[in-house]
Image (cartoon, rainbow, N blue to C red):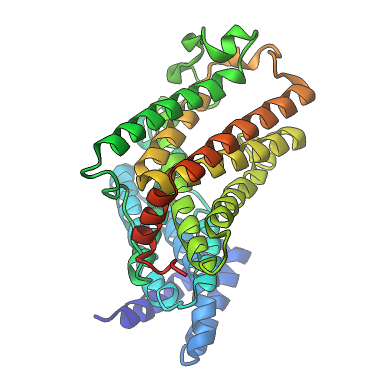
Length: 398
């Protein structure tokens, strides 16, 4: 079966599902999805228009319809919830493969590859969720479901596929330091310093005095079993892993495509680092509207500033080390610390409490991240150029 036929078959299957879902739920979204699927089939011979519709709408429709169908099956067959949920996880990982290969894979210009990727990584995961009300709410599967880890894996599947189709390289670890002992030792030192920076950054926000910023950290304030955020302990671990995979894999593809788009610019590397940091920071504005982790407008602003700084550092670290797993680990570590914070961390103002304190914390963090980013970019230009050539298969060369 060709990839074209696979997508065509999927379109017809989803058209049938759309009719059934409209009849079942009388939902406006189901009706809109039905209309878009009919339109997609009608314009299929117009390749450009079909590709545009496929890129903009089909991944969202395929994912949302699949989730609605699986949710319905779980409601109808509550005694088979575990089996249905496993099928849901497996199905979600493959549901966008045909449209990714045919529609996204056909994009030739790097700027459009970038725009399509930004759209895809933002919209994946938007929509209904599975409810596992008849399962143990403290159990692993409920924690896994609420963590949205599966959507991070869907993004990983998307990034893996498009990098291969677009003739780029994707790997969690390039052999950057093979046969280079001194450079490998430097990498180990930078990795250890990075772990310290993550701990420093976290405990700085909790510090009641200056000693607690640099040392004398109170690790008793970290307990995933007594999280101030989540009751399910599995969710603490899995949400941290989700953030590490989702946001760092997204950072990798954004960074890679920006390097190719900016290949004729003298400030190619700097522009790619800053651009990827902006793309990482801006979605955090959504935390002001989150149902569970809602932040005030001021705190959201401070978080965007902080995440921009970290985004610069993480991008520089990827370019220097050629090891995506490093940023996945440190990102997951930081989120684990945050989500493992006990209710005691929510009591009291600390050194950086209030609006002024929050602003100071954000600016200090920004300066630290940017300074270390500049250090890496200035100190290791040849190594960074080498890794860029590996990532882009020389497509970023002027």
